[in-house]
Length: 242
Length: 216
Image 1 (tube, rainbow over the protein chains, first blue to last red):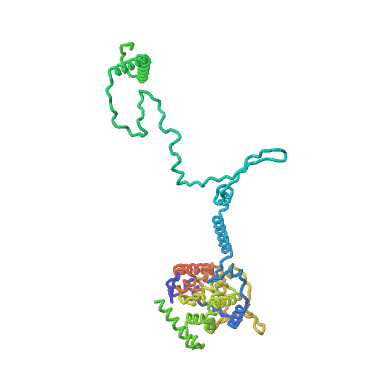
Image 2: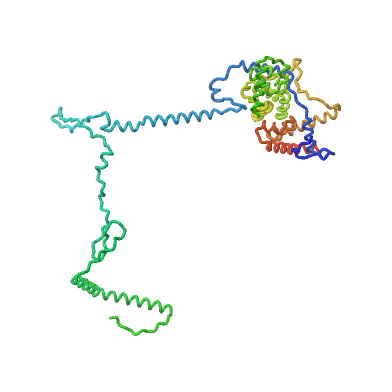
């Protein structure tokens, strides 16, 4: 019967090569089991049943599962190592050696009420010396919920900006950056107004020359720049700013 | 559906077991799966009948796969010993034929990878009259010359089979020599049917290439 899954099909006349191969494969002689196979098999089964079971370590490391697959002993070794590792970590965390050591070396731990305190030795003679020993009660354990409110929390360093006081500079009125509401304007008195005018006039008298020089330098620099750009500029009548 | 079938199979075996009507003629009429269920109840005769049914097909399969008749006989013995010892692992959801072919195939592959074997209970290969044991080949051809030619062809095919990769060889032997269905081969090799078909075709192509001179 032709097989639809075969790679080629015969055209009905001469068998094609794969077809001939398939025919030969099907016609290959059938190999039979030995004549006395059943007898030997019975004996082998009897021997296998009579044989002592494998030692426990062999069964442990090479358990046979379905299909003849054997789990390697390495897997058991890895699992055992992991168990030992986890157990070690657990024991370490439970015992907490470091904490116990710290507790033992510090005074005042629970169970110790008095600490003997000794003074330096005062030598009386070559054979005798005097030392004062006094038992002291250790400080009670700190109770954070009780002590925390008593600790001052104000900053040791002032946090407001150190701005030099000057009448010309607006001083911050608050510690926030929010501008204050409209400042209250107070009418100045006539004397105060006169003082202010005098101050302004005096300031300009002192600074007049430097201001004029600065403006002149700026103008000359601008004119020079324009000339470099070849822009015709009519000569202006020279005026002495003074 | 499958569950009902399994249940009826179990029930039938249970009835047979309780009726104590386990004579050879009755057992030979049972299916492989029923025999295996009876063997799981320690009916040794059921195992013997299974051995009778499968020893020749399995021997042929193992020999075509390994190419060594002595190793094949020992592997066949190992296969049945494994069936005997692992009978409790068999589940009726699988066909007995595919289960036993899987065991034989795994043992044959392990043998090929190992390259050698140590026999605990070797099969005696010499007869009582010291005549060398040889595997009997059936001769259906009346003409001696043609038969000799055919034997040469079969030897060439067997050598070519051993040259192709194991996965292709297994598929070709199961399909073209053992004449199993694609579904059975898929169960034995634990592969999808598409993969099985692909492997069969590739195996045949490689065989054809190796035997090009034979078919010119």
